Image (cartoon, rainbow, N blue to C red; front, side):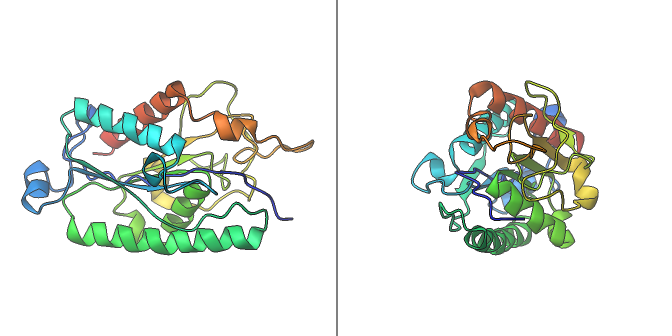
Length: 249
């Protein structure tokens, strides 16, 4: 396909190493084990979207920061008060050249892989959740789909405005305004998440041409840039994510 300008796309990978959570979510090794090894109950790793600044919103981008903040509040309400948030500091150029865009994605995948391996090795008692928006969700989904050894340790994956959205994937969809999108992402459907799909939450609105490519007409990125940045959208995504995390515990 011809190069597609993806505009500021936002992502965050959340690493949830929680001792408790909404719906009775418990860590793999228990709260006491997490505390004993000096690990947080929840570790949040965020990947921003294309051209998003690392200097604002904790390096997560507006949408991801809002979702992470609300998830943290919901987890705290359930007794999880030790949450660490960090950002993956990959390059993300404001460029319409697909080669430059893909180079940023590949760098993000390397950095995310290294960080997830480190968390799994040093904090095995913690729970691991990855959440991404736009370019960040592409980085997260492609990394985990290609590395089953990492995916098995992920308790929750959240994808927002994913350019690799697959309408046929058996994931949990966030109930957002409008009809459920039926198109694939702007960079094609996939990849197959395997058994991780049942622990995956996806948010995509009908008018978002990045995650729901229209069959004809022009490309309007307004929905992609604004549909997920409000409090109501962040609340819906966070509630769905924490519910799935609890169900998988």
